[in-house]
Length: 214
Ligand SMILES: CC(C)(COP(=O)(O)OP(=O)(O)OC[C@H]1O[C@@H](n2cnc3c(N)ncnc32)[C@H](O)[C@@H]1OP(=O)(O)O)[C@@H](O)C(=O)NCCC(=O)NCCS
Image 1 (tube, rainbow, N blue to C red):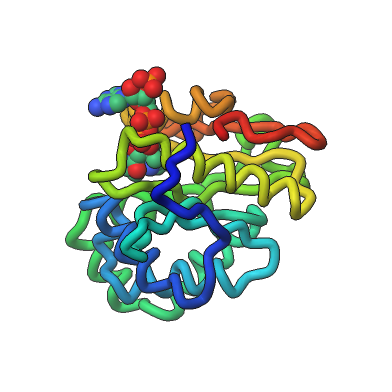
Image 2: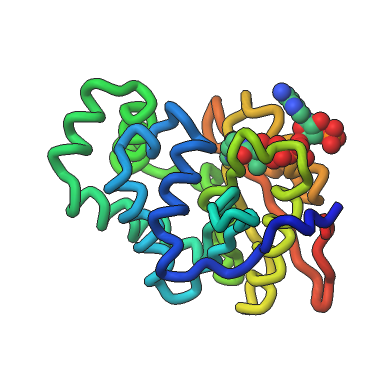
């Protein structure tokens, strides 16, 4: 249901600080949040500066950012990972040692780099150049259950279609039941397990399809 007290719009450069704050509020204790505000600002600045980014924000009547849905070309995530490691090498090394939420994805990444890929170990869909990736979607706890997240993902999907993407993919923790239910309600389909703990979802866009959730 549309939420008239919030504006859903494409993110602007001046939104970066608010997006970082919103991320920290929506994902407390998760790996990227624990890297700190400077890292989060770097993340959203990186995406906003990139070609083929899809970055939506929900802005409340007080001007605060209540929700974010950010992604775009799937190559951006790898580029961001490299750029952030170059920008914050010591912080990354330290957090990898002390924080299991950071250590797990870093070890998975390293494992993926040294393990030879078997023929069918990568889902065929990841090779689709028309596929976007949804990096993060989150709304502040006080805004959950309001329908705002549905509007945000609808805006994200429309913007993907505007840029010519034919589908989008995301990865979510198997245990994140609320998010999984949310994605399924918005028409995303679980398609593969990346590893034991996360699930890939995909949504295919049809021409002139209006969003499933708005
Ligand atoms: C994921 C998120 C964006 C969804 O927004 P939301 O406002 O919570 O979405 P909804 O209120 O539509 O809830 C989704 C569904 O989960 C259900 N749900 C509510 N609370 C739940 C809970 N504690 N456990 C499991 N399901 C729950 C809701 O009932 C709803 O289904 P229904 O409408 O069929 O009843 C939001 O919860 C969020 O920001 N979570 C933290 C960040 C995050 O995990 N993002 C996803 C990372 S991949």
